[in-house]
Image (tube, rainbow, N blue to C red; front, side, top):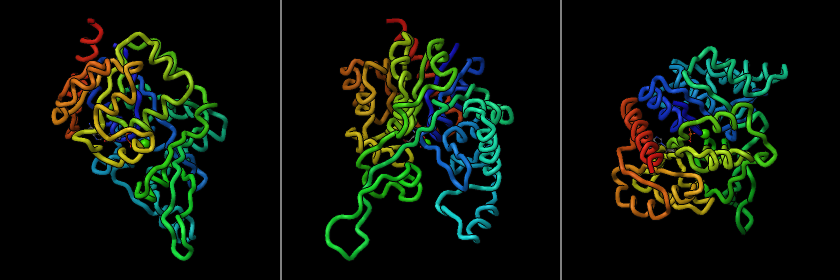
Length: 327
Ligand code: GDP
Ligand code: CA
């Protein structure tokens, strides 16, 4: 079975670990979000690709859900001693090595997809991990920063990099708009459209619908390829009981005018894209609403408390795909 998964960071990676356990023989291609990518200290950092690679390759910091296990921060401290920041982005020594290798290879002319493949030679994630594009796409968030004092009137309105919004500001101010800068001109990376065309099933894991899955879908050609693939497209809700399970997805959902509920996210994707949607059992009451939108829906436990729980979710998603295929 050939499975294509559109993944962000933590939610995507943990689901993928379950999927691998549920169907060890499946051929899994992961299309990774690169809208979160950022240049720091002259290095290219790809947080979502690395979270998938480290999680599936056994190098992830489990509690945090991102970054390396057994990490130290000497390099960051030394940089800070020179007054070189940003200090709000936690890059550890082990993690730095990944970004150095990546930046070196990019500098030598390799596209990000080839670099990612080379990094995965070490981590052996057991899936084919492809960035959504080799072109530069950067998600920016329009915010009004709180008034710093003196003059009357509102604070300064500006666009900040997604990482600055998420990590430095901790989504503490409303996101007024979310823009994947560069997406319109981007081309899907080699292998992306081919994997979609050859897939037996396409899954949206419980990843952020706006800044993870939404960004991937913003690369011209990807949304159309999925909608026209003619195979079941099944999503799992990242919203449980009207709130994101972790993080601040509600803030970026509000920016695109979508309420933070499992059915609203399904409707946001729409029946043109989704054939099936899994909601958590606490949201069983919304199944009818989702089905009224033309999307087959089931309520099952959706908390990835451990790998087995994620594997059960993956089995439910594949079962729903077969149900959809049968009609
Ligand atoms: P990020 O790039 O690290 O933010 O990760 P993703 O975009 O892949 O996933 C973030 C989303 O995963 C958040 O909106 C969370 O609500 C969701 N999430 C995290 N853990 C769980 C879980 O155990 N169950 C469900 N249903 N969603 C989860
Ligand atoms: Ca992310």
